[in-house]
Length: 130
Image (cartoon, rainbow, N blue to C red; front, side):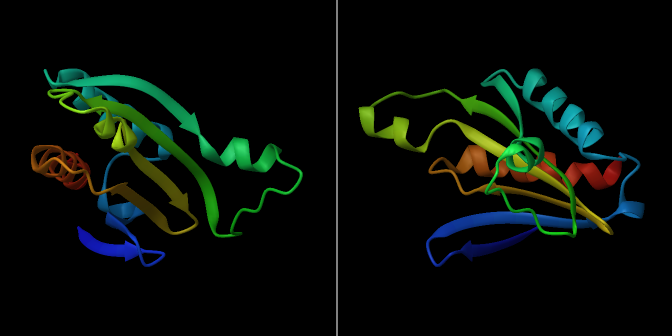
């Protein structure tokens, strides 16, 4: 996993995989695998799957890189504390799964809660083990 700063302000974690580096083939298979991780975790709650590729393609002004084949977000929440209204600004969590012509990019925005980052990083890295 690589940590970087997107657009000079967003800390993101990313894993880039060749299609031969996992037995999971296609965005839907990876999303299903990660959704199972969310469902199994006692402090996470599944919210939705957002088909970003289809949404963007449907827009008259939508632009998609020619290298991108598919892209979806798994949306869920780590909900162990709601101690201030401000925390709502950084929830829920999302893991993006993008298929390119040569592989996959799985990424997420750094959360303000270390256990969330550690858990998401573990889930994403485990994709290479199946």
